[in-house]
Every structure is written in C-alpha cells, then in structure tokens.
Image (tube, rainbow, N blue to C red; front, side, top):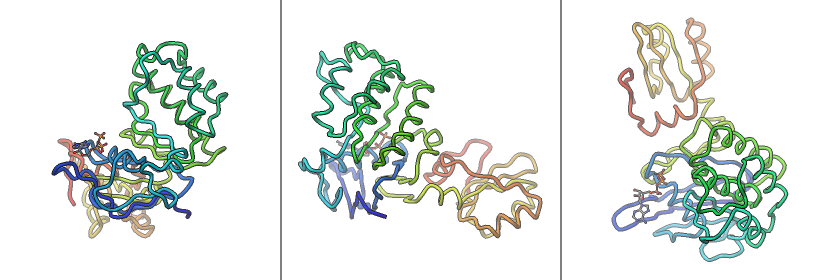
Amino acid sequence: MTTIVEARGLTKRYRGITAVDGVDFQLARNTITGLLGRNGAGKTTLMHLLTGQEFATHGSITIAGESPVENPRVLQHTCFIKESQRYPDDFKPKHVFAAAPGFFPNWDADFARELAAELRLPVDRRIKKLSRGQLSSVGIIVGLASRAPITIFDEPYLGLDAIARQAFYDRLLADYAAHPRTIILSTHLIDEVADLLEHALVIDNGRILIDSPVDALRAHAATIAGPAEAVERAVAGLDVIHRERLGGFVSATVAGITEQVTASARAAGLEVGPVSLQQLIIRQTGGTPTEHEEVTR
Ligand SMILES: Nc1ncnc2c1ncn2[C@@H]1O[C@H](COP(=O)(O)OP(=O)(O)OP(=O)(O)O)[C@@H](O)[C@H]1O
C-alpha cells in the first residue's frame, strides 16, 4: 500500500477537553475510508487537523509526507466538504461552480452541470434561499466535480432525500472508479455507505477503536442463531459482543469468527449470518442495548 495520510501520536486538546487523543493511523492512497464514530468522538477535529485548519497539540499528521498547515502544495490537492460551509451573501450555486476551478485544478465543469441537473439544484437561486437539502447538493457537487486527490466529506447530506443520497453514492462510486482518489467520508449513516467503504476508521472518545479493511471486519464477525442451548455451546469461549433473546431462541453476535466455528455451528443446525457494519460498530462503541437485548463483553 502507498500511504498518503499518516498520523503519529496525534493529539488535540481544547482547554481540558482531549478531542483527539494520541492517535496513530495510516490511510492508503486511492481508497475510500469511512471515518465513523458517535457524536463528539473527535471526527470533525481529526478532519480539521487533516486539512490544516487546526494545529495539533502533540504529534503530527502528514499528507504525502508534508504537514497540511499553511501548505498550499497540500491544500490545492485537498477538497473538504463540511456541513457548515459558508458562502458570500449574494452567491448562487452557479457562482460557486464558476469560482471552483481557481481552487481545484482538476475541476470538471460538465460533470458539475450534470450533477446539478440530476440533483435538481436551482443553480440560479441565491444560496441563502436554498433548502437544507439543496445546500447539501452544492457541497456534494463541489466535492465530486473537484476531483481533488484527497476529498473529505463531513456528513455531506444533511436534509438530502433518499433519491438524492442514492444519486450521490452511485456517482461517487462510478467517478472514483474512473478517477481514483483518496476519499474520506464521515457519516452516521453507516449501513447506507457500507458498500462504498473499503476501510473503516472508527474513533471513540478521541481514540481509534477500529482501523481495518471493511471486508476483514465483516469476515470476522457473524451472528449465530438458534435454540439457546445449542447457540451457547457453539459460542462458548468466543468473543460474544451481543446477545438477543426471544423465548428459547438466541441470536449471538460473535467477533473473531473462524471458518471452523462457522462450519461446526452449521453442522449443529444453527443459522450463521452476516453482521451489518453498523451493528458491528454500534456494538464495539458501546451502543445502548434495547429492552430485548443483553450485552456481554
Ligand atoms: N473548539 C472547541 N473547543 C472546545 N471543545 C471542542 C472544540 N471542538 C470540539 N470540541 C470537543 O471535542 C470533542 C470532539 O468533537 P468533534 O466535533 O471532533 O466530534 P465529532 O466526532 O465530529 O462529533 P459529531 O458526530 O457530533 O459531529 C467534543 O467533546 C467537542 O465538544
């Protein structure tokens, strides 16, 4: 793998609050990474450090070996789409798109026009008058049409309807295949984007909890379901991250599953099924159990 982003002992403190707490990680060039975690986990702070908008208290973060802070060489290769993007008062989407080539050398104006039509964005209306979803569409179009070698989306789709979100995922995947680049997507809609992600970086309380290819995460967890006694026999000694009971039946979510465990559970007549990425992450970040659930760890 060619590393493009590298964090070493990266720490950010705000007066007594440690938002990012000594994290180490690397991101491979030309991959799509999901930056995931609960509210207040430190995702936005990490993206601000990555884009040179914040200084690290300790440690370092580099892009292609260079610090992003006040570094035009790095910043001209980076596009950061954040939820709270501000525009000049009288700006319309068409002005944003006209200004974009000055910031993004790879800007594709035709692609931006196509996306605007697909997302039904009124390009000639003042940004101040746009709906929340239309405002998100402006960010999504800039993020995609910039074709920046490092593109970061921080919860880009507030207010976007399901059709527009699906259009974003489809376009992102197709354009990434045609123009590979490094994409970081921070989101709470984990299952919606799960099929897009190649790598997951899960942050919790400022620390990295999971840093893994998504395929490996999925391959190493499964649910084993069936009559309680048989399930308990099958999962004895394994890392059960969640149990759900319904009458005499149990569904156990197991981490660190092996082919042997899968085979013997099936041989015992139990059902072995996949775990959704969202469920897996909720379990690992201490998701609150519902009244039907009991978490053992
Ligand atoms: N400028 C700041 N001053 C003080 N505390 C801050 C500042 N920015 C962030 N924090 C705190 O740092 C922690 C991490 O915040 P951050 O915005 O990075 O979380 P997040 O993972 O992006 O959350 P969300 O999913 O809710 O957007 C939080 O406890 C937050 O209150």
